[in-house]
Image (cartoon, rainbow, N blue to C red):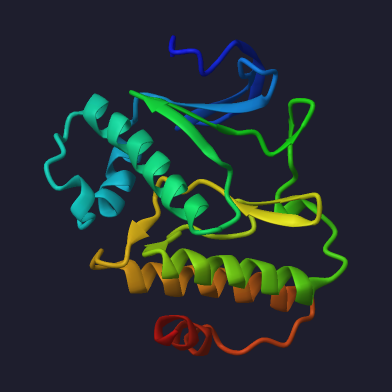
Length: 211
């Protein structure tokens, strides 16, 4: 990116099979998260397709690897933008170009905020309510996260942040309801382990859908 969004790339925060996350600085010294999507393996490509097919925003997508990676980056940027503007706690999206996504860095000094899985949850009820409220806001702005669990929720300054929105789908997607149910099952499973008495996921699903 040479349009003044990134002034410095400092180092790798996280490296995975599908993407690498770098810590960088913007022109005013602000911390940036720079996500670079890697050329996909056949396995990852197969995994991406259910979230792209059925999404009316990406009807005419070419199936070659490079096109799919670029679409995946665009998809995450669009999903983050929609969510952020609706008040969902997500990293603020800044720019996207080809397979590079730039967003707000959630953390401090190049250290990413811990995952929900990694923190000691002192007030499970309050934490559960915060996450559920974000799921509802996401649904009201027309999206389902589709892969929500304790592995893609960060906790920072007593706030929760949902991330990895590349697989989030619009409500028109034929599997949106199934994906929402899966997200809710993961949420309920995690907080029941912490001792919370919660309604069944099906009951929470009905509450969200009818709002």
